[in-house]
Image (cartoon, rainbow, N blue to C red):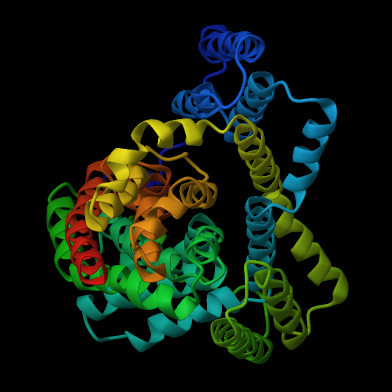
Length: 475
């Protein structure tokens, strides 16, 4: 019997023993005490204002929940700054409308739209329609159909994990019947989904990139996301067959029960077809409008609810069911919204201490003497040491700290798109395993992480070379 035929391995619950809790609580407590001492004995501007950021990075590596990590880091920032009550209230109040918090709200709305697409059957219809085109055309055509299905769904929903979770039940039976291995299916979904995440017009991190770079979606697509998506499609022709050969030798196939055809998601064919067309037309229309008018960060706050309403009405979904779907989808991302609000407040309290002014005063002369290309590559490389799980916030922070200096060096909007996109996307592909790789493995019921990591590296290296060339041409 094939060891993998029983399905995916059960996910282990996080360890919660006393030793584990102590390893997480004690460093946080020590850091908070240190923060209070620093706050008492120092005054801004001070480089000690970076202590909360360092604490954030260290606690994230321990596996602590990111919301808890952000809360501890926020308390650390307050203790280091020790602002008057009025100033603290001002920072907390301003963070509600901060661009970082708005991006968190966009993520909540995107999740709500994703749930509407699921319950109306639109997500299923898009995946099935793309797979139908590849029917009977061979393994390569099917591989690309699966990849493009993930790309389109992630682009539409603006979330990788949620979209792949919707696509997987439809793709796995098709892949199993065609003889694809679990690992090859996971790599196909990973490459297609990550390309779609780069293309997604209303994904939080992409909205942040366009906001910081002060550019429109067309420019973002032409110089940033488009080349990455095209490279992903081209390299898949080499990477996926290789993974298929290697994993087939390890008998990494799906079981017969997993090849069973999945039924549509309960909506009538006519209603689903109508809702699918309505959603796609609305999506394309809003993207064209946003590009033409150069709409700002707040435009998705209008576009996403509009897509949800149009899709629900076209599917003739009752008001009660539509509201339930919106609440169900949005509620999943409420912790993310809280996280982004706390990050906005964290940045606000750090700004009171002006640590970056101290850093720039110390290293600024050397940075100002750099040529634009090395500077751009150095900032893009920050993606490998960024804030885990908060790429949109990372993009905003990079823009705030290095934006004026980069503009002074002659770095224009198109170059900033590349810098910020690679700073926020590079660690998706390596050099270490990450949540996106593990997520793709989980939904594809695969168990061999090295294949995903190898596929990530296969894209990471040429993508670095590609963006270096593009930056050299732009600067």
